[in-house]
Length: 399
Image 1 (spheres, one colour):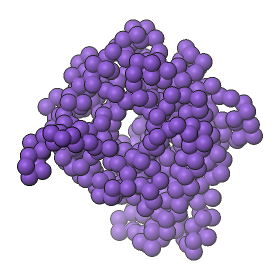
Image 2 (cartoon, one colour; image 1 turned 90 degrees about the vertical axis):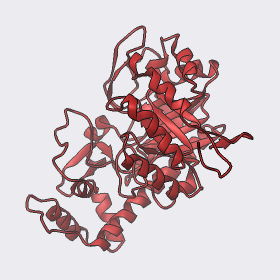
Image 3 (tube, one colour; image 1 turned 45 degrees about the vertical axis):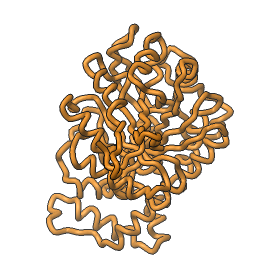
Image 4 (tube, helix red, strand yellow; image 1 turned 60 degrees about the vertical axis):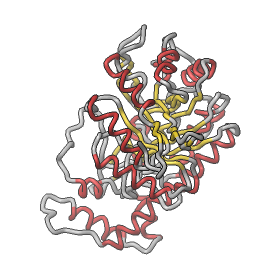
């Protein structure tokens, strides 16, 4: 949480993100992070497919993470009988990549947060299409596991528990803890700009059999609703709408599934690692948001210590997201802004953006990304730790 000392200085904690391969094999990583003023590092413990640059690592320049994976040993006893089992991260030269990297960082004096991506796995979605999100056009999104399914919930809670088990972890940060939707930045994406925001929102509604069954249980005519969604997203969709009451029911259904997933994951984490002192979740104040940072439900802030919202663009819209987040959590949880030093962020915009988020009431800054940022971005990483310190005048205004 934000702290104000006797002199009136408002100190905003900064949490910096990294991958295990950024730390392992780089003896200078910890010193660089310490020199930036970082005290807590969010380290990927379960992550999705990625192709990551490593511009400052002494041993490589790129890492190909070929699938979503658990960056811990995949213990057969933990996954016995499970339909969904994560692969191991064989592209990292370590038996326990997260555990090894976390130990290095802890020994160097850092707090470590486990960064856990839950429902984003193309490999598992392709192998189990019946567990993936499905649009109103019966088109599956294999990268998105639907939270309605018991197999997905068991996968997520086991993944999270195994991520933190027997590690020096103080915080669990849950990403993709809810509904993923239409947007997916990967596989040479060719959908950008094809549909407006409203259409993408409708195409993000999961219409798989399990979700339709839940709608029916809530009194909704599922088939008629799917037909209305298709009409509203069709080639001649002008003027086509979906009944607002039906949309309200769909959102209630989605939020109920998200709440169940989140509560089970949190319970599993706390059982596996009783010493964890903070649970954080990536979420947006827009209740309809989907993706790695899905929409806040009415009870999210009651269940977690911290909510992190995506504020990467250095725009007023991102600052407004920060304001809305502060209002939405309403003091029940701390509010954090997720920012990046990577392009298209620019030198002239970044510091002012972070300052505006702090002035909007943000309690923490979550900083992306220690491993991806090259030498030309190190000064921005440092700026992120310097900006969130404000002196208040006699009227309580920041100066």
